[in-house]
Length: 342
Image 1 (cartoon, rainbow, N blue to C red):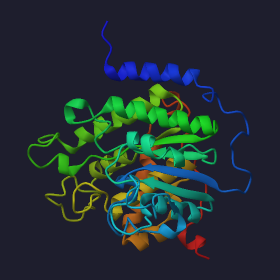
Image 2 (image 1 turned 180 degrees about the horizontal axis):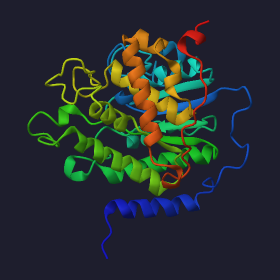
Image 3 (image 1 turned 45 degrees about the horizontal axis):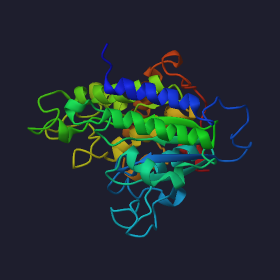
Image 4 (image 1 turned 90 degrees about the vertical axis):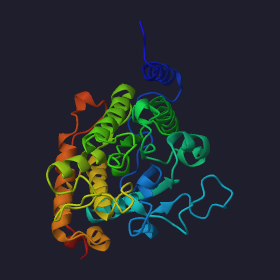
């Protein structure tokens, strides 16, 4: 009988997890925040978190902790996109949680162009801490893809699981999430690319398979934040354009001008997905005058459309029985942007 390399990696990691002294079910109350204390959350990834370009890159940076800010130039974790600190999508998430009346302390560990293996090799001093109640992991944009499309799925499975084990050894009660990234137009529409000649759905489907397969086999992730699926929903519903190289009037461009990183619209959609996935809050409650959207240049109508798409996608994500440890989206009342401002 022949087993794929990915399957064997998963089996070895599952056995290893069972043998780790810290890999046990969370005891009630252990590692959980005190009543009224902030929920400390760490986002680990690359420019698909920090956004790569203003206004997303610098948005609300004073409200979060950029773990890479101020590191000496010789450090492998030093920022390379110019002077920080960075805010990005985690800082948009922070603003949304503030407006929803939630208390989150947000930290960002993001190094451009890097993988989860890089973070395991270089950033355990940040990641391996008991204080994290939630951690969100994001792989390099092509990592979860099939090898024939340029991915490194076995490496992704390996190091995402190593990081999950590291976090749970430090705090067995921590909730870990995978941040499913989106299809790249620059790898789809130009010639001689991994997805040339394929619809944008093809890369999106492969990313979905990669992230959800890991979560389902591992069983210790609280869920997947389906940002990439939300992008595809926006495209299929006619809210967003499918091909930024041939723009359609009246549709939002979720990519920035490199057709790779998120535009303010794409970043806002991602943050709404994270809000719904991690907190259970309904992003539609934020309303047309939500403050982060206005600061990023989104119209009230665009904000409402993206909030709705995030809500619909998280509601459509696999149910708990197919995603071990995943909680369904709860429709919790939240303050609107106007209410939060007063």
